[in-house]
Image (tube, rainbow, N blue to C red):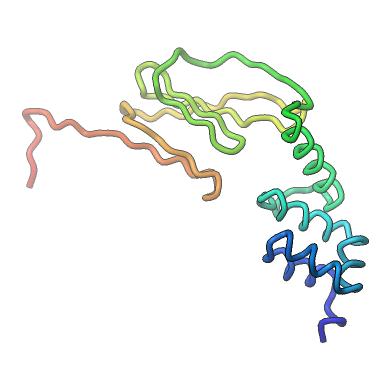
Length: 167
C-alpha cells in the first residue's frame, strides 16, 4: 500500500515528522530515500520543515525555486550576511508605536492617528512602498499577526465627555 502512494503524498506525510525522524527513515527505507533525493517538492518540504518555515501556497514559484530561495536565506542567516541592502525614508517621526513581524514593518505617527505599513523586500528588485492606514482616532497600541492573513488589530480608547449618556 505505502509503495503505491505518489511521491507528493509521501512527502506530505513525512513533513509532519521532525527532520531527524525523516533522516532516520531515509537511512532504513530505499523508497523514502529516493523520494527525498529526487523530488524537488520533497527537498523543498524537507528543507522547509527543518527551517521551521511555513509554505505560502499562493506563491507562483515552483518547488525548486522555493527550495533555492530557502537555501539562500538559510545560508544568509547562518553567516549573518544579507544578500542585499535597501533603504527608505520612514514616513513619520517617532511615536512609540511600531512593530516588526514577519515581512511587515508598521509605525505610527506622532498623533497616533495614522499607521504606515511597509512590506519588507525579499529581493533587491522589490519596490519599497509605504501604505497609509488612517485610524481616525488616537491609537493606544496595535498588534500584527502574519499567521492570520496579515491581521492588524488596533486598540483605541473612547473617553466619554461630560455630555455622554449611557443607557
